[in-house]
Amino acid sequence: MRVALFTETFLPKVDGIVTVLVLLMDHLIKRGVEFVVVAPKLHSDMDRYRGQKVIRVPGVRLPLYPELTIGPPTLSTYREVKNFQPDIAHFIHPALVGTGGLMMAKRLKVPTLASFHLDLANMTRYYGVGFLEPVVWWYTKTNFNAADYALAPSRLMQREMIEHGVKEVGLWRRGVDADLFHPRFASHAMRCRLSDGHPDDTIMLYVGRLSNEKQIHTIRTALERAPGTRLAVVGDGPARQDLNEHFAGTPTKFMGYLRGEELSSAFASADVFVFPSAMETFGLVLIEAMASGLPVVTSRVGGVEDMVTPGVNGYSFHVGDVRGMIDGIRAVMSMPSKRKIMGRNARMFAETQSWPVMMDELVTCYDDLISGRDPSI
Image 1 (cartoon, rainbow, N blue to C red):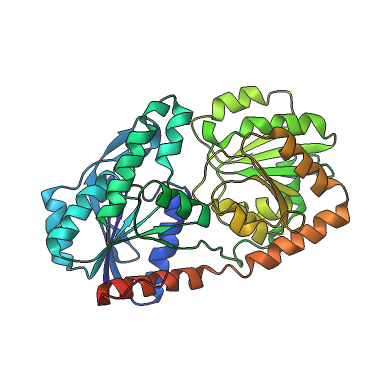
Image 2: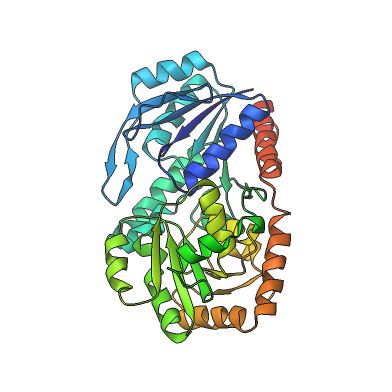
């Protein structure tokens, strides 16, 4: 089997899309599946990933999302993809690279699969161009319907895609590396870092991109109403400076980007994971936090309904419901024993969400489409 992967974002950028893509590429290598990656060229000249070819497409920064680069494939791109002779083309949320790639795949007469990773339509509301939301959904629907099959990351997103006119939508579930994210990575040294030298306080943790739609600023109210708590923020993004100013004078520590074992330790060394985001397609950081033994308090976005059982491994609240977020945090923190039980429950659930199983389901979907069968996911 030979797979052409088209993506709008790639290494060295760090985000949920790239995380899933890297996991997919590693799994394909493990399964002996050959692939080529078609990705924008801006941040890096990397032309190989573990021996597999990366075809770079000229790109420019997207004004509404400066960490993302966009650009259409060229005739040279087409020739390189054609020379690879793919059996199937997989589009990681097709936009410009993906739209051109879909036309290439049709010309090469190979089956096509598009997976949903980024809610661009909803994002327009948080960048002052909400009037573009219908246009973005139309463009998204058009691209996904141009593929032979589409995949959603959660049941919530699957319903929304169907409601907006995407015709064939399966479910490609998300998983977690339960060895990489594990309670054993907890450390006193990391607690001291997260708490700015106050490890005995209760540590609330946020991990993710720092941007307006994540609504991180709302956590300040919880800090003010819960004495003895501190907030650690891991990640970076366009809202970093505004958030620095917003949380000035509060017990908040901005950690910047953490990777590898440092990130695993940050998750495992906190007490509760707080995630007030207004929009997610799934929310990988939630399952990573749960694998690390943290109860989660999260807005009802992305895959939350697939992961969180209220009162068992966390609590959820409506987007923008600060009172609900505070109630959830207080409920988790009401007794140390309860917090520990919920953390163990979170870990037990995460252990059932194995990435290899999710990736094997995707490879089976590839085989179904190549063979002309109805996809099994």
